[in-house]
Length: 254
Image 1: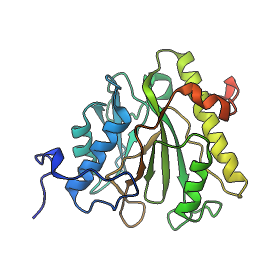
Image 2 (image 1 turned 60 degrees about the vertical axis):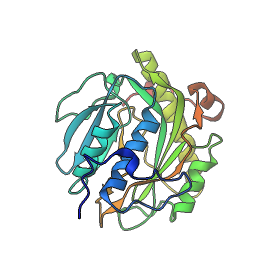
Image 3 (image 1 turned 30 degrees about the vertical axis):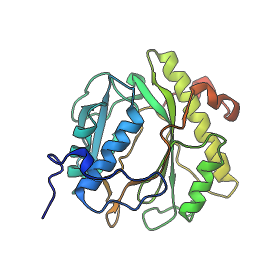
Image 4 (image 1 turned 60 degrees about the horizontal axis):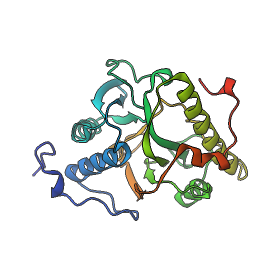
């Protein structure tokens, strides 16, 4: 018998433990994973709208960042037939069904992130980490440990959460945030280069990444899931200054 994830209470399924939990096997478990992730990442964000974007339809649905239940219900349903992504940087208002948002209008970010692909049938490049352990070694080499690490299906996505949600109220704020994002990613890319690996540059503030609890449908469907979670491990933006090289101003914005 199928489970109605829209009417099931949130406490009906145990939240995964932080130490590489087994993937939930049913829709209710996936729904809980998505909702818990959104709450952990956007706690304290208050206002702002998240883009939930799907492929291959290339359609966008907009949700308030504090509507974890609505985001989870939509994302899990949509992932039965599509790949589902979310905009890490929030927008001040919904931008319609055909837009994922733009960097120059992002109104806030919850932290920093990096996306590391792992070699395999889903990726044509051979210049990639060959195992999950090698990919984890890259992100954990950075002196500040990630708050959350997600197994995206064929790679890792790591997040460094801020102590307070960073409201970006001006172009200057966005330039500073982008410089830190570029610097963090350049550090990870430099670690990878020592091993002959290439890591995609995903520093733009309007970047979309995969939502835990959804399915990666690039090949055989595989669940996107949190494998390491310490949401209490948080940083100030200035904490990154000692460990990154700032990108010149002219190179900050796409």
